[in-house]
Amino acid sequence: MRAAVITRPRTLEVQEVPTPTPGPGQVRVRVGAAGVCGTDLHLFDGHFHARLPLIPGHEVAGVIDEVGPGVADLREGQLVALDPVVPCGQCWACRRGQRQHCLRFEALGLTRAGGFAQHVVAPAANAYPVRGLSAAEAAFAEPLGCVAWGIVRLRPEPGSKALLFGAGPIGLLLMQALLISGAAEVTVVDPVPERLALAKALGASHAVPAGAGMADALRDLEPHGFDVVAEATGVAGVVEAMPRYAAVGGKVLIFGVAPEEATVRLSPYDVFQRDLSVVGSFSLNGTLPLALNWLESGRVRVGPLISHRLPIEELGKALEYKEHPGMGDALKVLIVPE
Image 1 (cartoon, rainbow, N blue to C red):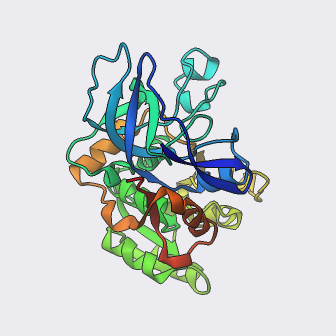
Image 2: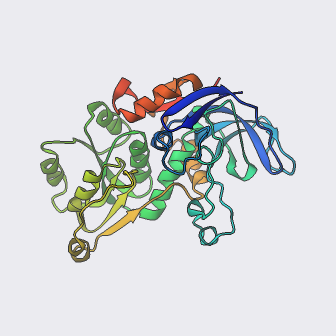
Image 3: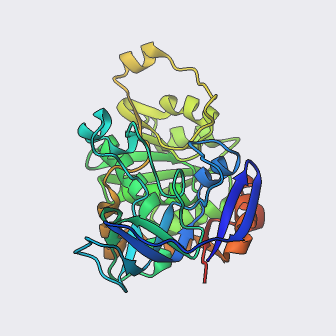
């Protein structure tokens, strides 16, 4: 089969590799679509658990075309979305229900062969049947599962007013999830006018351009601050500014992936005196079924987020789009092997 392989940091090759065969308790999936994520760029750089050489791709949906021994509840021909996290189920973290923090961490597309290939093998327990969606739509189940875990961690209050920095693909998913999980209004900040327009089309109450005048515009909207302040940027400067826009008793969600070496200044007195809560959210934790519920019900719309569908041979271009935001008007790029 054809597969995109990171052979060493910053080196990507499309190779002919053996088509995998599912073992006991596994299924083989013919990949219909696989989303390109910022994590893939980190892997391309040799970071973030990368075990090279590696076939990346962890946002995967496709049709089961072979079932391994001992698999009872899945069948060939089913469209499934894959949860990439493969926990050991036995370590301290797994026993606490924190499977994405497994001390023997494994994941499709990160430490095991992933979905930027014609086929991928996965544990049957990680394959979730999909109803009423295309493979392209189902490929959003993994990033939306990450968003769902962020919502579980955040627990927005009913009727709350939220501020969200970042209107990229993950930000627009988070915005929609906030609106169906308690927030009455979401104000979105982004420097790109087209992304702000899309945010409004998908339900944002207000769209504020980043830059000069932003702070005044946000104060005009909510003079006493927002109940929830979230970010999907991974920019340390944005994270550092977030508490100043939170209301008394407000919640701050750090969702974007900042560089590992990044630091921010935080006033502990401010957090103490204003009863602020600062929440982090990493990966997904058994939340892919919730994400599929949102997708299958139409409560979260993903079609407008897809800007490119590229073959395996153009994964390098897709990574360039992630490395240089705004290049080629890229929003969500999908790799479609066939």
